[in-house]
Length: 293
Image (cartoon, rainbow, N blue to C red; front, side, top):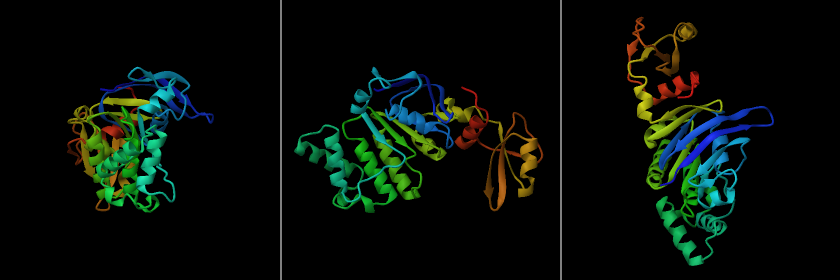
């Protein structure tokens, strides 16, 4: 059972942007969702854990491995799928995985062949093993990305915005693959897509402006909002006045009109109806009230 312990981790870029602001986080074995809007600091945290950038201060450990000061040791047990998974232009899926296996220190050719075949079957690409990866769809490339991340029996797998741009079918296939992987190692899933966390993760954190503003289970995030979320469909020209008068969590268009969710301890009247909170409500509540929980 692997574990990540992060204490007081901070990172400020040369342009003055504070990407990580005294981050403290404990991540246990299994699927962990890191949720936040674009620019929240998710990728900065992922890149730090993946030893691709240094922090200014603080500490991070993978079990007893010091991530900040022992990057080579971390990389021996790390699988990483970045937001943009680049591929070589003219190699096949089989050749790509074989090459990465060599880079990860698997020298014996027969061992590599057995591993590559196993991984291609696991991600349902064995019948495409001789095809150029360049011609793969976005979802197929992501499946190759997960396959390469699994090489070397990693203790920690980091996937950064893995389903962005995938069609619903590929997204479901990718979710099933991640769920299959996630019961044996620490998988950190960084995303701005709330549904990814709902469907995959039993533990999560919400990040905003470099801070952790919530840490716990999705179920507990919903429990905190029980009886406090109210919905109403309004006219588009009324939206600004409602935002002025109420704590509007979110608004989205339904049949051409804004449907708003507001946060209120008591029945606000005025045609609002009580609704069961969803994780999107919790997400917007936390990022609009950035207080560490």
